[in-house]
Length: 425
Ligand SMILES: Cc1cc2nc3c(=O)[nH]c(=O)nc-3n(C[C@H](O)[C@H](O)[C@H](O)COP(=O)(O)OP(=O)(O)OC[C@H]3O[C@@H](n4cnc5c(N)ncnc54)[C@H](O)[C@@H]3O)c2cc1C
Image (cartoon, rainbow, N blue to C red; front, side, top):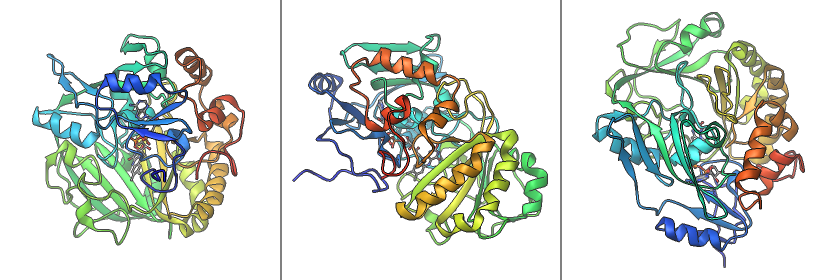
């Protein structure tokens, strides 16, 4: 019997006929040469059918690890299978750092940048903005090498796995730095409304967590270099370590209480050796322009009883604008509204659809790796460079070897992502 292969959350069973784990680029080339349809699986942390195929699935986790720091110590070249946790430890040992990290270090770098995964911080671009070079193995066996000056790079970085196999990436790095992480509780709704920008700018990285059982914010997580004392706009310092999802073990989380620590042990919320988030969940997320942030929060507040019924926790973060064609932060400083749902697709999807309706007037762009039901035409309409991206995929992969029904729906308008269509289950 075929091994049942699922994503991390378990809501997607992949339809691939085989999973390959090549141990060299030569083996990878041989797999590609024998495939008519192929997708790369990163660490499988996406919640929809983006990574799926009915052809061959390839994991690059077995490729030799590459971590080559440039002589000027401003960039690092890495392989297409490495995870952030491993890369971060190697960089920290060299007194270097990435500018930001997601909530968890478990994800692969190539998979994360392909979906524009992000952390938080009004001045921090998403993780894909650190990419200054890509090496992409195309279906015809050729390798495209895109450096920072290459006109295709801005289109290829958030590539949804549609151009080819990313065998190597070059990332910008900075000197290592320390941060302190503080958790505050019960931020009054009125303070949020009045001081939203000040609160979101109160640290290098700021996250607001709420279960929407009331209108106040349950927890504010601040990651910053300078020490903090006293209240924060009416929120009180937590009296011990916290997990964003009430009841979950706090040992899963990175160090709090303002104790200084290295960047890679403070920027993610969750520690590599432990289960991130709740472990039994679905996720959705929408990005709106930061200027629409207050109105978007008000729109969710209107729906909060419906949302709270299927929610574990909601996180509000910020991301700086960039120029990447398919980045949800394309040309706009953004506020992201993230929802960790209960693990029940039938119960969650109607609420997702209602939220999308409520957030659409505020210019919401869904996270590529999470659950959404927005019509493909609306998704495409949200990206001024979408047509250029579609043309890029046709140029890189004219036979559609790297396409799948999920991409066909988004790129071609040939199907809807609503209801039973390929997407969320
Ligand atoms: C618990 C949890 C917490 C999360 N926290 C955050 C967060 O803080 N911020 C955020 O923005 N998102 C977050 N996410 C979402 C997650 O970061 C994205 O779904 C990300 O894409 C997952 O990376 P992955 O390596 O698992 O990629 P996968 O889900 O395996 O793949 C994603 C896409 O990348 C492609 N891909 C992967 N590797 C390659 C390669 N080498 N070449 C070409 N294509 C490739 C795949 O084909 C697919 O299209 C979270 C998810 C979970 C489960």
